[in-house]
Image (cartoon, each protein chain N blue to C red):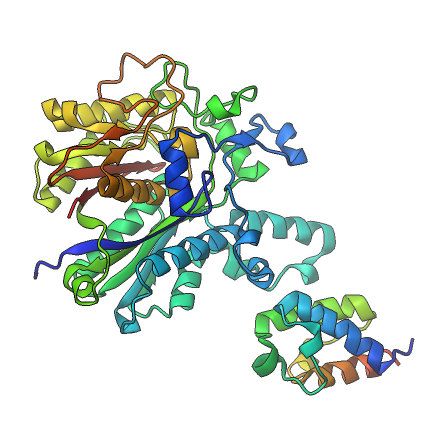
Length: 411
Length: 82
């Protein structure tokens, strides 16, 4: 296989911290929490009364008729993709060489549930004809593909909270394998609804810190008690290096590898030994052709669950060895909440910004660092990253035992 | 109950504006739903259901394929309400 290098030329996001990449990144560096009490009546009827809703409602960013025909997850995908495409300079290109890979963990779950309510209350005749295109998990990718007229392929990997990272890895392979020159990739989630929240709460996966929502997402803190559900999405425009150079595109950084593995351990619980995570990391470094010495930053999965954070930290320490001492680990879910299928995507956006600005974002809400955490966590304030050639990792894991590690490198 | 053509047109304009985002002022009897008003087959289902609710008439599926223009729909509804 010819060595086709892949670079990042565009970024887009809509998150609990901002309606675009710029405002989100500024709020992230400032250590802002995007978690708030939910104002809907139903919130008080379930065990968890808060979440991290997007900072800017889609209705402020798109036409009313688009809102009507798109599930909220699709709205996030379209909004973030428009920003990313514009950021990439809206490349004039052969659309048969343009792909889209946008993931979601749960798809159009609010559409499904809202339309089920209509079916029960008003009957089948009033169920929207847009229901199926809105609830299908490939809807976000399909709508972006339609808007951009992408014809190299539109795909949606689904692996729960690893979905967004897996999508970016899939996009990387599409370009490496010469199926496409440009791929719009990322992940979205819009699952703030009493049904999925009750499901997560029943698993005891969510924080119940109802009296202090902004402090509820606290990865690595001794008193963490679960994750905080977030919504939104992130999109990266990946592009073949020579294609980007030929059109004079601004290049943020290079994406140089990915590693995938599965645990074979439990449907939801992390393997306490983190063997699967270690293998994914090892595969990623081998694929990237670098060693642990080259890594200076890692945006951790770290969702703020008691078991998950430690299992991940142990796995990272085991895989990185002594080199973990020079890896600045950021747990940005402390500010954004957990975007499930969008998580790996917005965290990849953060890595690209971190490499560009040589700044690792902080982790907030650590009052008492859990002594079992054996990695170097960036706390409270951003940390400057070294000059010269540097590499950074994003790791993402999903219910089902999916592990994904992506490797980015400065350029 | 008889319906005046002008009233049906006015109501239909509101429905199409809501469903397809086309300004009511630009909706006329001669406009083609698909070609002029961006009402695709899925959105047409929405228009039909909303029109049935609003005007108290039944628009059978087999009749919908013949409703090519706004005028076709207005005339169908006026006749169905007689």
